[in-house]
Image (cartoon, rainbow, N blue to C red; front, top):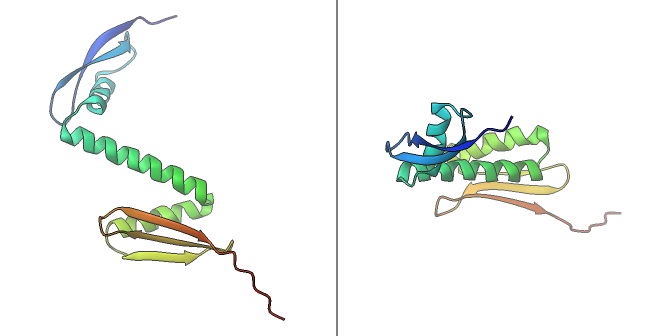
Length: 124
C-alpha cells in the first residue's frame, strides 16, 4: 500500500501562519501538521523553539558520549542547576581521573570542560 504524496497545510502554533507541507494522504493528523508547520515557520518564536530543541539534542549526545548512564542523570541535573543559577559552577573528579567542570561563561553559554590528567608520579 503506497500512499500518494499531497500538499497539505499546517498552522504555526506561535504566529498562526499557514505553511504548505508535502505529506502522504491521511498519514498525519491536524496536530502533526501544525507541529511540522511550526518547525518550518520562520517567526522568532518558532526559531527559538528549534534552537532550544537542537541545543538539547547536542547536549544529550555530548553527555551520552562522555559519561556513563549512571552519571548522565547527575550531569543533566547539574547542568540544569547551573543554567538556573542555583550553582555558579560545578567541578568534580571522576574515578577514571577525569576532572569535569560545568559553568556559564560571561556570554551565558554553557561550558563543559573534561580534562584527563596524565601526570606521572612515583612515590616510594
